[in-house]
Image (cartoon, rainbow, N blue to C red):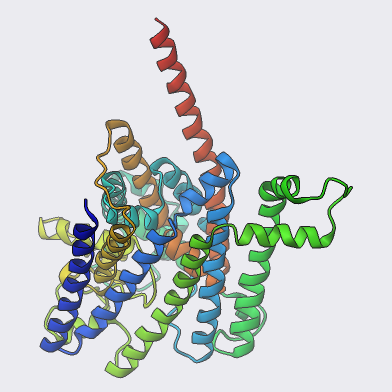
Amino acid sequence: MSEEKRRFWAYMIVGVLALISVSTYAYNEYYIYLSVYMWFGFVYGMCLQYGRFCFSSAFRDLFAVGVPRMAVGIMIAIALFGLVGAFVSATGLSTFHSAPTSFHAVVAGFIFGVGMTFAGGCASGSMYKTGEGNMNALLVVLSISVTQAIFVDIGGWTNSLVPEAWKASALTKGLPASITVTDGWVDQYLAGYVWDQPVMSFATMLGWTDKSYIGAFIGNLLIGVVIPGALLLVIVYYIWSRKTYMRKNLPKDQAAPTWRNELAGYWAMISASKRTAIAGLALGIAAGLHMYAIQGLRVKFGMRNAGALLERIGFDFGLSAQGTVFDPGYWYVTTQEAQWVGWLFHRLGWNHLDNIFFGWVNGIPNPAFNPADWMSIALFGGAAVMALLHNEFKFKKPTLETATWALMGGALMGIGSRLGLGCNVGAFFVRVSQGDPSGWLFGLGMVGGAFIGVKLVNHWTERRMAQQFAASKI
């Protein structure tokens, strides 16, 4: 594709999004709420594609080839998001809520970690790769979405796997009759186990509030993000980066490195990829500003959730039993993609409003009027624009083998996302940056799962190559 055509299509995408914003706002000012989601999604897509930002790549690069570039970029983005998020929290405009903290987050992260290495991309990474024309990544996105929509509504024989204690606890939660909590094991898992776990932040554990300056900046940011993040990068430096740096930069007449050499090596690791670092910086700042903008609009329109907004403009189909829809107020993926499939299944006759995930918490509104859906669609657009401008857009067809890995990996990520109440973005990136300890637990499981996943993929690849080599000799 020529440069002129690439620029034409990039400008066309921006123009279509701008036209949507202007025309919908002219129709009803409430649509600005959806447009804010859309434009932040566009920015996320550009940042992800520009920095080749993928959590699967980060772990694969570490465990397979010992390159820490992406892991460093992710920690930079988390720290920057944490800094902006702390300011937003201290001003009382944060939209973030901590998740229940227990061992379930580790298990969920492990399943997700295995899945993303099988698929060759995490949830957000698969989305930006779809935007740059990778059809294998599109299969991953579809697999995650369909798996979630099916998984959250499974009942029947799977109910026999549920501990009686979960069932008994779920029945005490006072859920409406429309939510058939005893006919879905995920519902019993959520209401009977997850909801009973403690919800906390590093600030509240230390006796402060998230909205206080000391709680936001000292508790959640410094203690919950900066210190553990810096220590993790020290570990990454000593295991994967230090030896190479010292071999190349330590003077031959110097017997041992000094602390100055160590600091220089640590900084060299952090600044190794300017493109990834810049993307992480922009991503972190944008994610924080997103919370600020959404909360400001909620105050302006006098509402707490977009469900009220959809009712006002006459699109109330698919609202949850609480009159709400999925409206996180910050960067999130996987849930809104599951809503697409849930909405479609419901329209085809499969009741998807009788479970907790859709029927009580998130709803299944028409994708055309779902704020989080606008964010995801625009993320594809932002990634496409950045890829077109950098001559990195190219349609890539999957092979049977890569498609199989994509579908398997996507299914595991879908299951892990629902068990962990989020993916690499919602359950790890966002939670860690906002001082939620459950995010670190999900991340711990994700690292373990990625390690095992890399080993399994490498074993499969080596075995297949050996078989092909043996066949060629015959």
